[in-house]
Image (cartoon, rainbow, N blue to C red):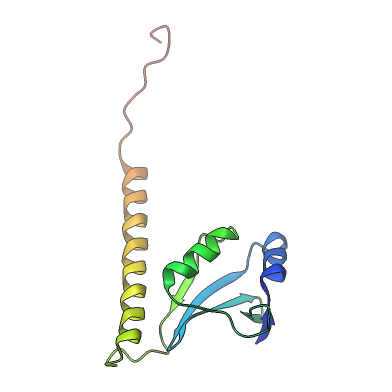
Length: 125
């Protein structure tokens, strides 16, 4: 996995619309993994250390700020039976995000499938 900083990521996003973004849970927080084809990067800070976000909301805010509106969430590194409160919080955040996404998708489909009222044309035709 190659490191990628914010400036390089922003440039890559402008040039590559097929970039896949994943927020991966770990004990310290959420890290970002980015993939294009066979190339995989991890977001790093100015000191070239892996950037870790405290919450999934912070990840979402960061990604919206660089025009990424869709990303995957991976909690596979967390044991669901763990008693660690911080890890349980991360699992809860991921579950809430998934439920919210599903609710929005369902509402969009319902709106698209709803019958449209006819709009009268000017002049009565």
